[in-house]
Amino acid sequence: MERQRVHMRMQHREKQTEEQEIAAGGNRSVHNELEKNRRAQLRHCLEQLKKQVPLSSDSMRNTHLNLLRRAQLHIKKLQEQDERAEQMKGRLRWEQRELRVRLEQLQRGSERMRNDSQGSPMSSERSDSDRKE
Image (cartoon, rainbow, N blue to C red; front, side):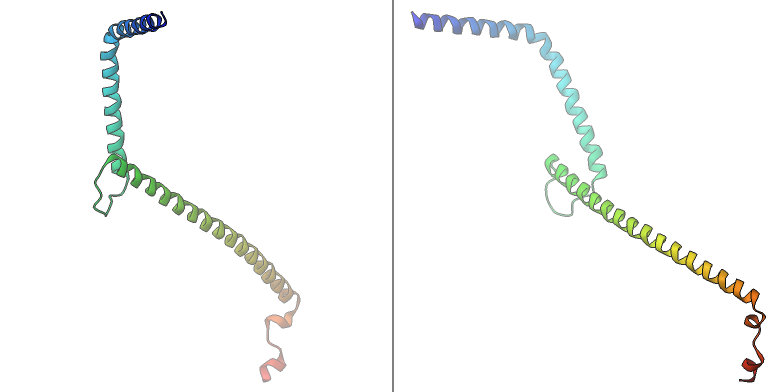
């Protein structure tokens, strides 16, 4: 009795599966076309990536997987270069600020010297004692 129920359930499932496959027959061609377009798009993207990634110097096969690995390494290298450039930019900004401060100090010092020399007639001309030496 139990065997009959199990057998009937299996027949029922098989029938449902067949009906679904028949109904999906029209959808299958749509699915196939979508899959074809997806693969074409993927190929196009891989070709674009191949143009952006430097060629490998080793003798590895040019598979999609190797292309993706090379792209990954290239991106990592670019990120490291970008980080080094950002660090250099930070150091240069700091140095620029330091130089501006130094320039302001020098300008203030030269203004003081100019003001001092304008107030004292002896500073711009050598004194008689300086000339004798």
